Amino acid sequence: MNVIDPRTGKPRLLVLVGPTAVGKTRYSLEIARRWNAEIISGDSMQVYRGMDIGTAKIKPEEMEGIPHHLIDIRDPEEPFSAAEFQSLASGLIEEIAARGRLPFIVGGTGLYIEALLYGFDFPEAPSDGRIRSELKAYAERHGAEALHERLRAVDPESAARLHPNDVKRVIRALEIALETGEAMSAKIAGFREMRESPYAFCLIGLTMDREVLYDRINKRVDAMIAAGLVDEVRMLLSRGVPPDATSMQAIGYKEIVPHLTEGLPLEEAVERLKRDTRRYAKRQLSWFRRMNGIEWVDVTDERNFLANLEAIHAIITGKFRKQAEYIK
Image 1 (cartoon, rainbow, N blue to C red):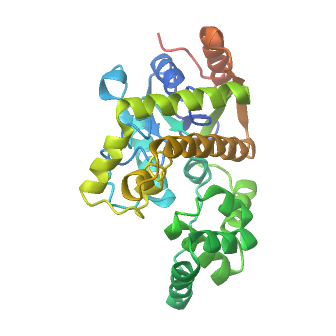
Image 2: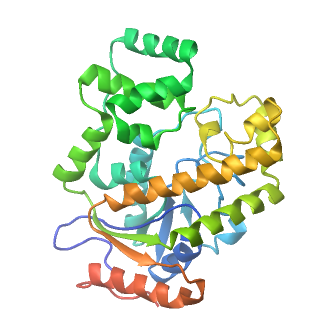
């Protein structure tokens, strides 16, 4: 298949999104094999080394020889942002296309994926350090929840996306709103409506019945605990990763930390993790439904895997139909 769209001259890009636990990994391997693709992870937390169980990271032996990118590229002490993802992923798309293969984004971090698809210009950090100092002091005096409520008042969409404990990013969003007079989410919405994508992309979303998805989430959490998630979090803390590091705000980690540091009963930590993961899945679906051009495939019934896969292939063929040919 031609990896450049001859009508526009833009690189072709395949994108698969969906909420956590919907089954993206299984489908992505089959799609990548069929379309001679290389996978670029669109997950904000799978970039971190040593954070494997809680992020449901694919294991090397499960990749089936298909190249995967942007996995294990940062230490947990290091920050990682949507702007960095945008820069790294755009470079990888060029490299993969130059090899004659199809770049394939797979993930559930909506901001990262839309930033890439539409070339968001991320606001520079405000120059007035007084705002940041005031917000930090406010958080110390009144707590993370109170700071998060301030964000909710000026930018409810960003507040819904950010966990209250992710103080650094909450402050960042508040800085932008207070310094520029415009919410970060409004800037993103403006780009979504006004920007033409630099890619000829095919965007597919996986969805399923909510109760089925929530049951899968609960079972996945139980499997993570059985696989050693608590020990994984303990190891990160023992090596000195701060509990307020960006990486430790990931769902699966921030819920276990109080069990290890404050004596929270494990059963309660697990219930919080299940609850937070279900809420996160709901936020993911809300974000994806606002994305332009998404084609949805309902994968509720696992017995229909092959039929669902063929439906996905048909969508891709339809999108790329003038030059599409299945890779034999």
